[in-house]
Structure formats: structure tokens, C-alpha cells
Length: 204
Image (cartoon, one colour):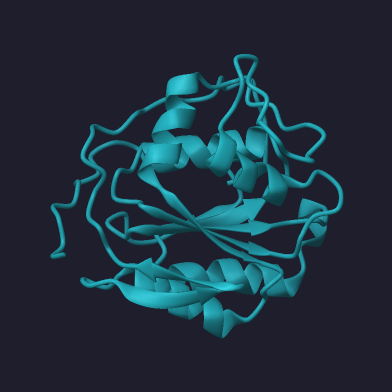
């Protein structure tokens, strides 16, 4: 399973602003860290996770606080870079907006014709600012690595490293083992779609 061709980024990427750091745009992995605090009070350990993620090779790493605009921005920043094939979801489980549950449900079930994420406990999980095609492209392009409630930096570093490997390596996530490797760029053109400039948000 050798590396496939990478896509050179010739456009302004990431396409959406937010609370994130970026590194190598050829990297196959992005990291989203659940944030349950106000942006003015981001815990040191959350900042450390974001910083470590890009230092170890993630193309983009940032915080996710909401189950709507926050997820929309993740989708748009990922589908505009076909090199990203894995999304690591980490941080502590949210008991408020529940964006972690919303994102996992989105990957499994998608959205209905009104934009609501199917079968999630998140109370505000509606993606009303982006078209269905962007959601479906996101679900095809990336696979989710669920590290929720695992704040071990060493585990995160190993996950990022595993996504870079030419041949599949086994990685333990919770109760199961998954194969991670760099599968190459997604074989379709990037989708460049931006939420209206009138919308203001702080997520990835």
C-alpha cells in the first residue's frame, strides 16, 4: 500500500478562520480537541494538545466547542485539503453542547434533509450553513479516530505518527484496534466553500 500522490495546496488554506494552528498541508491527519471552557479560559492542557499535534505532524489542530458552526468549519477546512484522510477527535467528553457526540454521529449517520445530524444527543446539532454535498464529501474523505476522554499526549503522538506510515499499523482506540496509515490524497478535486463572512465563530 505505497503512498499515493499528494495534492499541492495553491489556494488560501484553511478556508475558514478559527482557533487552530496549522503545519504541513501534505499531512494526512487533522486533530479536533473538545473545548468545554470559554475561549478566554482555555486550559493549559488543551493548548498543549493543540500545540503538540502540529509539532508532531498534524496539518491542522484546533478546538471544537459547538455542534453546529464549529463542525461546519471543520468540514470546510478538511474538504478543501484532500491530503487530510484522518480526523483525531480528542479532549474530554462534553456534557453541554455535546459536539463530540454530534461529530461521531455525523460520521456514522449523516444529516437529514433539514440539516440535522441524525441520532445525536447534541441539542443544537444542525448544519444549516453548508450544502449536503460538503457533508457527504467529508464523510467519504476522512475516517474518525476516537480518542475522547483520553488526555494522554503520548497516545495522541502515536496516533499522529501512525497516520503517516506507508504500511498499515495497528493502533488501539478504546476497546478496539484500528489500522492507520497514509493512504494518499482523496482522489477527487478539493471543494472550496466558505461560510458567509457575516457568521462569526471560534471553532476549527
